[in-house]
Image 1 (cartoon, rainbow, N blue to C red):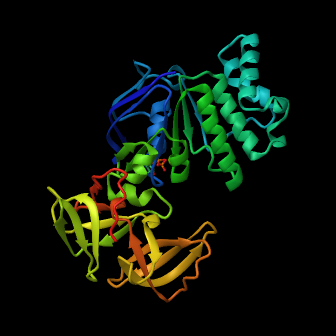
Image 2 (image 1 turned 90 degrees about the vertical axis):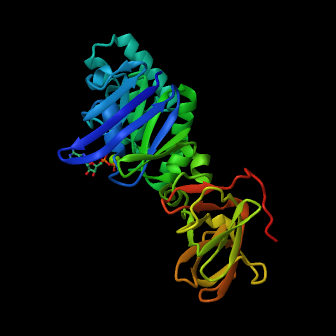
Image 3 (image 1 turned 45 degrees about the vertical axis):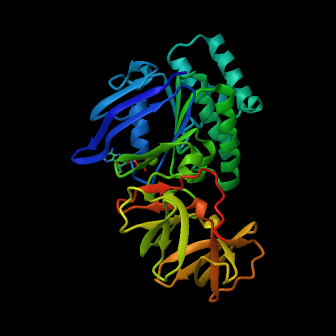
Length: 370
Ligand SMILES: Nc1ncnc2c1ncn2[C@@H]1O[C@H](COP(=O)(O)OP(=O)(O)O)[C@@H](O)[C@H]1O
Ligand SMILES: [Mg+2]
């Protein structure tokens, strides 16, 4: 098991720069997820760690050893891809042992590792089957097994669940989390799916625009996103952004006036923040449908999405912008009707003109606006 150290890493494909000056330390045994939109360089970063892609400049260290000029086989990593690429004519056992046989691992040792891996993945009964006799999830388990038997210092996963259907995807995700618990191995996992990132990661590395936008635990990423990009990328639906016409101070905290004159009290400290071009960030769960008298923000209902456990209420504000709030699953809110939401002032974020987030100073405090 080893940690990973990435220093000033840059990648160009010809004239096109994909990653710029990436610094990142991954601890031994940590489960780190690279998250970001399609084309932001997640796979490229992972492939550079694996040695499948050259670096343009910078350094990569694994377990205290500089590896960026070493071939993949000498880096102590195993990679699992989205397409599992099993050999169709070989049994599961042979697929798993192929790499080890290539490097002349003794037969008894190979058997021992395959038995152990099969037990970990709960598939001893599948060892003599061919890939065509397996489900998609079982095939993906074989691909993971193939990585396990190599006993790598680091596991690298590139969207390994993307080809699975929704139910299987969730189950395999849970299996992967349990595998990490059992092996205690260092794992780096690439995905564009924020739910996978939130559920699997010890820490999420959010990539955007050639750079690391934020590195933090899932809870921090969700509750204290560093930037507007992170706030809208994580969460389903993402954070709402409400235009602010003006801001004043009450007890050191920002009070925002919206374009329609509504007043929203926050527990975000105002000190040092430029007071123009501000945006209020509100998660949908902190916009709760209420009566007109108790409302902090009001508008007109455009769409109601009933999800069963709750309903998402899409609302047009008077200034033309849109927000999404919530109501119970059995909502009676109708499209086209006026609506008011109560806002939880202790859960708000203010974004400045550079899209940098300013958060509530009172961690966990329940601010009572009424
Ligand atoms: N071999 C390559 N040659 C040229 N451009 C590439 C190559 N591989 C990836 N790219 C480009 O680099 C960017 C990042 O790609 P990639 O790392 O695959 O993104 P992600 O995995 O985040 O979707 C994309 O714009 C992609 O088109
Ligand atoms: Mg990719």
